[in-house]
Length: 265
Image (cartoon, rainbow, N blue to C red; front, side, top):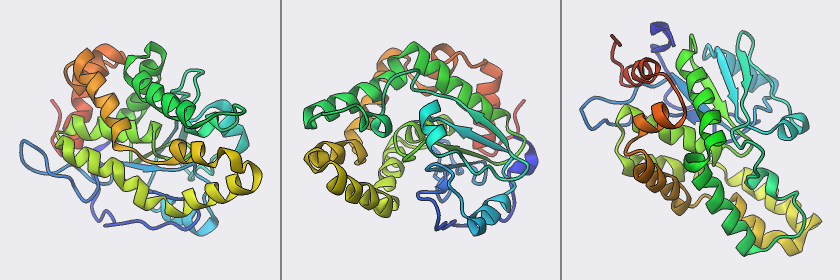
C-alpha cells in the first residue's frame, strides 16, 4: 500500500445495489487501544464481485488496485468476478480443499448437526489448518503489498472474509469487542442476500432449509472459536501471521503501521 492509499475524502459509507455487504474493513475508523483510529480506505470487504455497471464505476472511483478472491476454483467458475479496471486480481483458495458454508450446500443430504459441525471445523481450520493458514498468509500478504486500496472477498463475505477482516482489525489494535461487533454487522448488511438464498432453498430443497439456515447465518460463537484457537496456539495475531501463516515480520509490521496511520520504519 502506498501513502496515497491512506486516502483523503474516503466515503463515509458506500451503498452498492448489485452486491451485498461492501464496506470498509476499518468501519467508521475503529478506535485503537493505543489511541487514534484504524485507517479507512485501505481495505474493503464484500461478497463476490458481481458488479453492475453503475456499481463498477463507484468501485473504480475508489482507486482499487488489488482484488483478493478467497473462493474455491468451483465457486469462481460459477460466478467470476467483475474486476475493477486497473486492479490486479489474485485468487487464493484459503479452504485448501475443504468445504465452507458456500460449498457445503452442494454436498448432498445433511442435517443441522452436520451444518453446525462443519461451521465449527471451518473456523478452527482458519487457525489450526496448516494449508489454510498458508492461504490466509498469501491473502494478507497481497493486501499488505497492494499499491492502493484493496478488496478482499469470498462468496457470502462472512466467514473467510470475516476472518481476514478480524485479523486486520486486531493487527491494527482494535478492541476485540469491536471486532466481534463488526463481524456481526454482516448479519444486518446481508439481509437481502440471505433472503434470496432461503427462497431458493425453500423451492429447490425445502427439507434442507433448517440446516442451510445454520450455514448462512452469522454466529458470534464461530468467530470466537477462531479467536480462542489463535490465543491458545499463537498468543496474538502478529505471531499467528508470522509463525502461523509464514508472513515476513517486516511485512506484518509495515501493514500494522499503515492500518494504524503510522509511517513504518
